[in-house]
Length: 329
Image: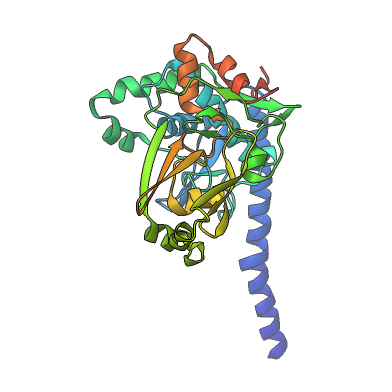
């Protein structure tokens, strides 16, 4: 009886667990191979997108996905050439993550290439949400962004033959930042470059006020800002600036903090800030919005308005790169 029972258990394991795993593995390999062939025959590229709000993976045309990304990430009012530069950057970011190209996909969601959660990948909006956002301008904006994507179809950004980390941000303010100063990784194509094209951005300047008590609460009681002012040691002192002119390290009260930490804890728009003390208030004046690395979106629009095309925009913000087509054409 024990032998029969043991055999039955083994049979269940084989039928229920091992065989399905083998079948699924085989399907995945065949599916990936077929999709890879399509990519280099100029046919539609398929991407597997984790829809985080529905908690499911959906397979869709890569170019349709890029339309949804551009619509979510860049104002539709922008110039066509700016939208094209965003489309190429967004496509590069997506393709670099795709499993068929050796990407790592989405952590925690096996089989997904990208996620619609901007904290994991790029923002994405579908038709219904865009209708809510754009209202009566939906048809015009959808057509405009679709054109930007179609006219750059399959195009990605490479450096020495490899897909780049095509990061982007809203407003750089004076200069973009290098990847090294923000994340500690040195990419030759993500260096600091001048940017004078984004000054009309509504996010170019910002001001936030905090009471000294709020500063101690948000940055830690050990900052002792009030005591620092009272004993004459000064409330703030810039210790180090980055190569792009942003705050690297700063003393606030009795505590030394990185500019990134101050930005995060005080929810500032950037690390390019100056501080004023007015009575019992500390005022932060910031320039720019975002981490500052890579493509500056408002800068791209400024360049487009000045007559530059999307290729010129891309090579301005990503140093030494080339634009290739994954379709092989």
